[in-house]
Length: 228
Image (tube, rainbow, N blue to C red; front, side):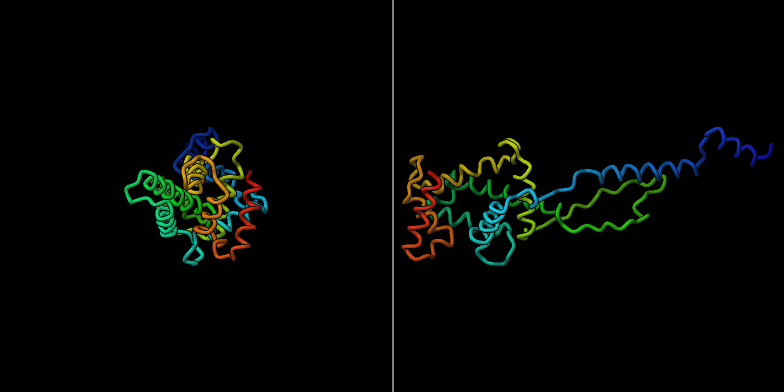
């Protein structure tokens, strides 16, 4: 038999040469990547009710984005930390203040990391994505963000709270955050938020503080009644 005949017999018998192995490698890589793409895509804001969206947007613009640059960054949380510290009368070494800094640091880092999921992606097919024999896969570069837009803010909140069915499904910093907020409103430390404390909180941290006195009193009365 000639060499050509030997090669033909090898193919018929299922023996794989270099070319066959290359084809197998290419298609196995293609299939593996296709399976990776089948991972459930983030749903984001579609998981939120209209009421939830309104509240998160209000939090973005009226509590955090005081410099009105339409993004949230570490700078905004630093400013909020300082406002809380002065409001509570804490010094820079107060344990409560240090805890607040830590929680807000985890808060913004979580959003910066999660927001990458909602960045526009290039869905184009590129044969250069495939590696030849002996070539190693390069580690995928992770985009680093320094700020979060209002669109990303709402998307990440939707993905975070929309899929949660119990408290343990939420990030640890978010599980602790309601207590931090309560302790800030309950300035006296009594364990019970009074109507006066709620009004002071609105005045210090929300745009409601710019209202006329009568309007602010009415808002406080309505809010306190709903809460209690």
